[in-house]
Length: 401
Image (cartoon, rainbow, N blue to C red; front, side, top):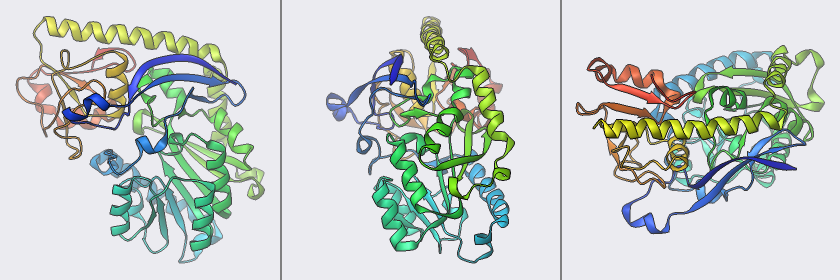
């Protein structure tokens, strides 16, 4: 049973950047968030139909960020070292599947001979197919896992980054993983951390593509009912801090193979109250205050004739702008380098997006729409900072960075 605790209002498709002509027909939905009493899962009250979000017009590219390129290169190197302990890795034909391969930012670190991908956005599936990786342009389902199994056999590694939290039906997702995973194979996925969202008040982690924000508590409950067991948890810094969860089939588990990090993370989450609805009611009140503070700050900037822009046309900023009713009267424009976004308007709030590699000299303040890449951005924009420009964020509080 789900209990609603947060209403983020009418929201558009977060990654659907539109033209002026598309404004009258833009799709909106009610973004309400609940807590599942049985599994302890934080999840949307109602899910957006996946094809509305993931299609040939999808515009987020992992490879556009040097942070993400380095993250996946480093992890691939570490994973290859980790896999040496398993018999299957001593073969030349280790089989790896990525669910949600985007533009190949992770799989390009692996030999394409035995590496496969699933990517429902056909624009990116075409790209990775051209790179030599057999890519299935479909949504991840049990039937698809059977198709891949029949074509290529079981997978030694199944990986997903910022993808499993996108899928409404977690039981089918995990049943499909179990079906395709080889004996002693490992399923690894990383997604935004619920504990960090609560600690930093980063409510913009919630949008259409993120129907769930995971705690390890909830994942343990749902995985175990699908015959999968968590063996390890890594806490990473990407995307505002994420959890990388390592999983094996329950029938293959040896008690000694379960790392201490699993109980450590669960104990920490219990301490935070992530198994208690009251924690999320308090969180909702903080979100409401954050909205008031941000609008007040931007209104003061406008009254002082300060020119404010936003840095990064992100899904996160879509949630913030639409929840806070922020438009081009408060933020002049958004700068971004993604070709598919340039010249369009932000979803719902309809702020113009322009191409720029540097913040212009007449800008006083830049809102960090991509706050999770703050270090990379501030380093890149050192000239802006030197001439007195200010970055602002709403995470964890509205403040100048």
